[in-house]
Amino acid sequence: MTFTRPAPANTPAAKTAARHPILTPAAPVVSPVILYGDAIRDTRQSRSIPPLRFWAMCAAGVITLIGLGIWLRHWLLYGEFFKMQPHEIALQHLGEACRLRDPDRTREYSYEVTQILRRYIEDRFGIQKVLLPTEEFLCELTVSPTALPASHRRLLAIFLEHYQLAKSAGWYYCRLDLEVMHLSAVEFVSQTAPGSPDTASRRAASSGTETGMPSRHRNDESKH
Image (tube, rainbow, N blue to C red; front, side):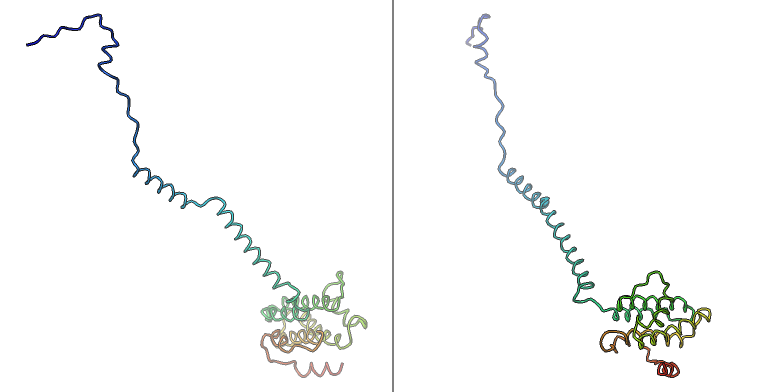
């Protein structure tokens, strides 16, 4: 057996520390597989969330399309190329007024038709008398020798005759008389329109009714 002499007590501490070196932490090593997976994840997230500029361009495109659609619709309805003439507008409105042509709605129907004729006369002949009620406005035109030609005044007088009869009867007119009243309004608009009367428009405004004016009204018109 060999006995080793113990180290003296006064041995410097530096030498003792040299025999047991301090271990420093190793640098972290990142696996390339992990880095590749993170890169794929970041790429997918960037693709799934489009940038703000993309959404702004989409919104601007949608707003532009809506604006173009509104402009095109307005141009088709009110453009000069598709602008309807006063007699065409009046005949269209008379056709729509047929829904009111019922004995129980005589007053409502009569008021609607007189308003249509007044607007037509104002637009067609440029006659503006705002202060006069509609009935007085139409009555004055039938007696004024300078407002309308004589043939036009006669047609308007035939309509006003039916209107006043319905008014005197307490706003109750039979269906046949309402149809004759309606046809007299259509006849006035058609005969006073510029150019030849439009037979198709007149038939459409009459709502498909083939009933003509009774003979007594035709005879009255011929007498005038």
